[in-house]
Length: 132
Ligand code: CO
Image (cartoon, rainbow, N blue to C red; front, side, top):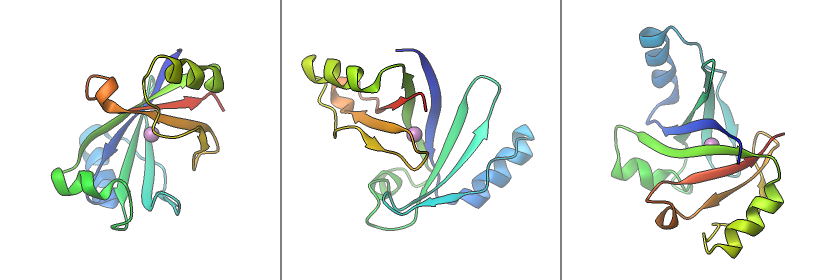
């Protein structure tokens, strides 16, 4: 493992959240993009050492929409950990009974990724992603 790439934060309204970050930290996020496969809108806010990934579900079908029901104000959702060799990390995770939620898949950002089951990670959801 190498570095924390981003922290994923679920928000109820991405435009309002972007406005808020602008007002509070004077940070301008990226123009929101839509991931059709995940049914979410996503924007990144870059800090010098890490990015925040704002995520707004746009459909009941989104895996994120249940999270927002339980946390109507939004909240911290996952940690994005970048690794040198994703396939190797995936094998290690399986061998160590960490229960990856899926095989590595291509993310909206073009990088391969998989998630680890939070029950095996002290109730914290980890997105493991490739360097590029
Ligand atoms: Co993420």
